[in-house]
Structure formats: structure tokens, C-alpha cells
Length: 196
Ligand SMILES: [Zn+2]
Image 1: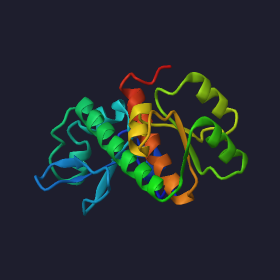
Image 2 (image 1 turned 120 degrees about the horizontal axis):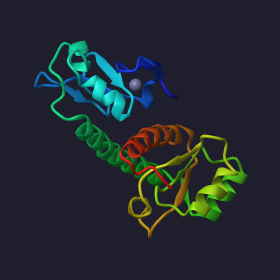
Image 3 (image 1 turned 30 degrees about the vertical axis):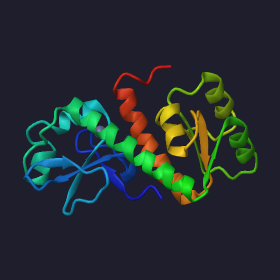
């Protein structure tokens, strides 16, 4: 589900395509961030990390690789734009899963879903209580507890008050949300908000 492997143009390490940021030549003849993977033509990839964004924006970076101009943004601007874009995509994906009846939220109901082996992916809000997170971390496979958005943002998407944790029961939707959350959280840590 993670898709084919791609190499980061800056650090030259390879990752599943869904864990990287795609850039393509935009209509203005400059390399642009292509979060939704919709721009035609060749793409180059960078890790969602500031160090790789910085290297990718240098002369002979991704612009050179694509045969077009470098992106207009600064590395920090790109990071912020990618995070905002991924927030929006997460909200859309979670809303879609919710309408499909594939979202379970609230600590007790998520725990029950885990007990029944029905949770494809578990996501905690970035500002969820530490206790909520540590209780869940004991129940899920290592690395499968994701972090995304805030309690207020999750509540808004799910049409309720604040939501600290939710599970996705549909495997394909769970994988999509997991890949978005992975990149979102990587950028958040790069933004200095990843502590605690
Ligand atoms: Zn990299």
C-alpha cells in the first residue's frame, strides 16, 4: 500500500513514495510542491525534513533535476506549506472515512476496537493527554500509533467536541491516513513542535 520506493534527491536514501514530498515542474516553469501527486511529468522527491528541503533548494537541486527553475519558497516556507496542505488532506481523508462509517473515536471505544483487532490505524491528536498516548502505545504494534492534528481539529472533522484519539477500521482508508499522518508529524517535529 505504501507504493514504490523513491529516493530523496537530497540525502539519497530511499523510502516508500508515500513518505516523501513530491515536486514537479509547475505551470510557471518552476519546481512546485505536488502533495496530491497530480502534476503530470517527472517528479523528484525530498524527505519531509528541513535539512533535505534546504539541500533540495540549492542550485543543481530539484529544479536542476527537473530541468526547470527552483521553487520560489524558502525551505521553511515549503515546510509550512506542506504541513498546512497535509492538514487539509488529513481533514478530508478523516471526514471521508467518518462518512463511510470507518471512524471510531474516544479512548474506550478505540480500546475495544483494538481488542477486536479491527483497528487499521490509530491516531492521537498532537495535544492528546500523555496518559491517553501511553495507554494506547501499550496496545498497538510499535510504530503504528500515529499523531496528527489537534483535538479541536479532529472534533471539528468528526462533528463533535474535542477528540483525543480515533481509530480507522477500513484498511485502505487507514493506510491513506497513516501515510498522511507520517509526513504531517515529521514536518511538525521539524517545526519544533514535536516535543512532549
Ligand atoms: Zn532526504
